[in-house]
Structure formats: C-alpha cells, structure tokens
Image: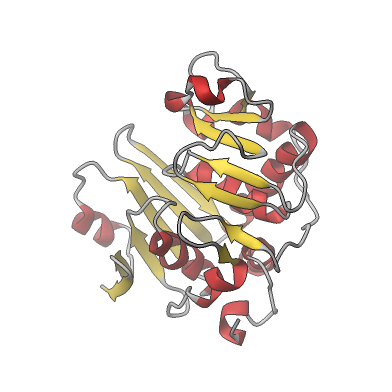
Length: 249
C-alpha cells in the first residue's frame, strides 16, 4: 500500500481512514445521494456518515453477534445505507459480499423490496426499508435497520481487520490495501458516480477515492434517466466516473 493510499495518518482500513477524516473534516460533505425513483436526496457530512457507521457497527455486533473475520452479505447495494453498513462491517473487522443475498453469510442485509423466501428465515437478517433513513414501510422479518439503528451508541472502537479480505468477489477478493491503492484522485475532488456497490470502480474511485482525497461523492445509482449533466453542474462536481476512470469536468 502506498503512503498516499494509506493517507498521511497511515490508516490501514477504509473505516479507520473515515474516522481520521471525520475528526479533521467533520462538517464538510462526504456523500450526497440521489434516488431518482423516489426523489430522495440525502446529504451526509463526514461526521454524520461516521456516526451512522458506528451506530450500524454496534447494531451488527450487539444485535446480530457479528465477529471479526465473518462475512456480511449486502444486497442493498444501491442505497446510501448499503454503503454505511459496508463501512460498519469493516469497522467491526468483517468482510462484505455485494449483490445477491448470500444465505450462507453470517449476516444478510437486504432491501425491503427484495426479501426472498431463501433469506427470510436467516437468523441474522437485516432489512433496509424503502422509507427515509432506511425505515420500513411495511412489516418484514429480521431486524428493521432504519427503525433500530438510531438507538445504538455513537461510538464503536475499530476491530481492525486490515490484513484480511475486505470484499469477497466472484473471481477474486479485495483487501483494504487493494481498495486504498486503487483510490487515486486529486485533493478535494467531488466525484459524480452512478455505479452500484457491486461495481469495483464505483467503490474505489466513486466512494473511497474522495474519502482518501478529503473530497466528496455525489452518488446516483438509481439515476433512471435523470439529467446527469445538469446535476454535475448544480452539484459543482469536479470529476465524473466513466467506466474505470475519473474524467475532470
């Protein structure tokens, strides 16, 4: 891992880098999320995102018994809560697997609209609702993420896990070093990205790179024909993720 990727503070994981950046850049925007199907626009500062991550890590550990080295399957991969839970799993020392829910994972996180019979009986099931803040709009099995997460503590001590896999993929796994090494962007960059979490470049360049650079992301994984050129202008982005490269605006 290069010194640049590790950050000047020597962070070994994305979660620990978030904590360092949050302490220094607290109220600056980190993530602006658009859902063009529902009209949602949610903006999270470094401090607010870090707070959600800590609360989510406490939920995963206290309510579901997640331990370092275990696996969290995240099918909610195109909503900001999915990115929060991803970093929370890393803070707890676990690895993540995105896309289709894996019933063999230690914890399974699914959107409210996709609770299948295969995972409905999973002993450690988290359901992310379609409502504001991931709240459920109808009864569902498992732990209701948006209804339960806010009751948890604002602090969670990082469990480490930098040496193990961060992301389990179909062809190969990614470590935190891999994620940080691939996250190259100009200082203070503001990136517009439409990729879901299951797309490696959407994670490394769209979400991790702005964190490394002390910048921010405008994440629109549910773009649904929206005017992205107009959004790039209105959100004052400085780069757009196209494929596997950041194009300056």
